[in-house]
Amino acid sequence: MVNFFSTKKYGHERGLSAAFRQWKASSHCRFIHGYSLEFEFEFGSRDLDEKNWVVDFGSLKGLEMWLRENFDHKTLVATDDPMLQTFEKLHDDGVIDMVTVEGTGAEIFAKMAMDFSSHLINEQYGDRCWVESVIVREHGANSAICRKEN
Image 1 (cartoon, rainbow, N blue to C red):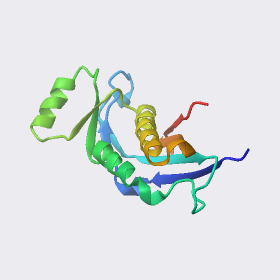
Image 2: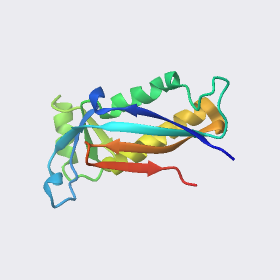
Image 3: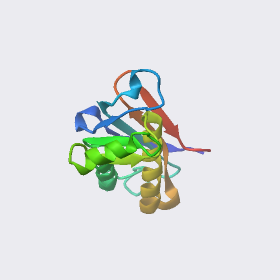
């Protein structure tokens, strides 16, 4: 049996600039810092559609919209961050545009993107397609991958 794969990348140049901190770290990662994040999605299928595609890249507008809503000039704050109330006040005062997340870091962001994109692809393509993996890159040296369970 053959499987087909295609990828869609939302590169650093797209300006998905997010700030966050890993409050549990003892290193400098405990401080607020940011990146223009890159997201790369790998889609899989056992069968191509009538156009010989795994997915129609034009059908992914909802994915880009979700990325912008969650990572475009946002400050991501973990629900268990002890400074959550301070961040909420900064948000209420218009200083930051906060998104509350279960945790921070490229691994969690890859999981968030995997969960959302898997739901989107399933809605649009049913069982014919799936999301094989999501890579989130902070920059050229740091990235994290979330893969589909087999």
